Amino acid sequence: MSEGTDPIRLSDEQRLEWLRLIRSQNVGPRTFRALLNHFGGARAALAALPSLARRGGVGAPQICSREDAEREIEACAKFGIALVALGESNYPRRLQMIDDAPPLLAIRGNADVLAMPLIAIVGSRNASAAGVKMTEGLTRGLCEAGFAIASGLARGIDAAAHRASLATGTLAVLAGGQDRVYPPEHAGLLDDVLHTGLAVTEMPLGWEPRARDFPRRNRLISGVSLGVVIVEAAKRSGSLITARLALEQGREVFAVPGSPLDPRAEGTNSLIKQGATPVTEADDIVSVLRPIMGPELDTELPAREQDRDEHEKSAPEPAADERARVIALLSPAPVSIDDLIRLSSTSPRIVRMVLLELEIAGRIERHGNGLVSLL
Image (cartoon, rainbow, N blue to C red; front, top):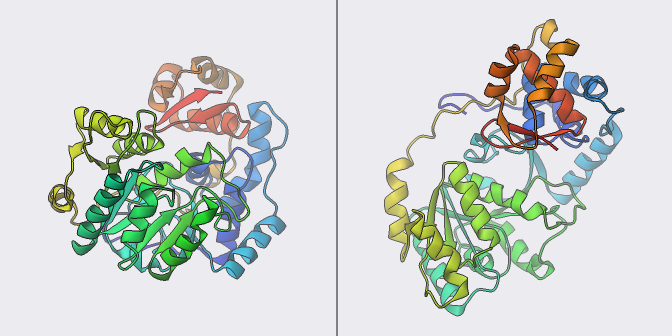
């Protein structure tokens, strides 16, 4: 959101339509944004899904029904959950700057924490006593400097970061639904978090987190934050996924060095060799972030309800030769949309429409930085 741009506010009907669209088959955050950009609103996008899927080579997709969406909204209200839309005032400002930001975020707790600059602290689930002590010291120092802490409610370093920041407010990013706490023994910790802080997830109520949901959650941990601090991480730790995602999102990455003899320090020591800022105290983080805080950078929020002319809303079908030229350029190797436009000698509008058809048919995947590939 550009500085000076008023936050959006969805009507109840628009929120219902957004929920139906994001809960429909083969519609993820990037596809949702592309659909809204093309059709101008979720209602028109929902109406176009069957046609897009057919043209992409499959039958009608599973579209979230109005009744299912209404039931989810009603269940959220009973659970004290707000479904906040991308661009609304309670949507984390930094998160809306990433290209795969969730269109709707389920939030519960005290949203005041979002007014504070956020730093993510993540690390080993099997944390050492020294790692926990370092985490607690860094967290207290950052809180005293006016920052709030974001983490993933996991065992070890995450839990230590949350506990040390309860007094000032902390943000827990969940991999499952708000009613499916993982690990289960952290249900009490989550209750403590909610007194002064916030729990957020893009998943619906009842969603049990699976292995593939944790990297998806990790992009939100880095996305809400100015920077990510890694405290203890093995060579193949999920925390390193968070560090990679942070770099892709343009966030600062910090790492606590450790003994070369400790496997839990392999990942953090490697990050430092690759250019991460080494950290031994909170001031190491604050000194890097203070100069870059200020007003947020301008960013476009295309996922808004917009007016489109009838030509765009009618979803014109690409000619057979146009579609064939675009599809012929696709492969399992990611390619940029700009290259598809250039190499196919086809207009950007037609290329985007072909990609939407293939997406709704489940035949391609969108990656970051405007890349797509065949599945």
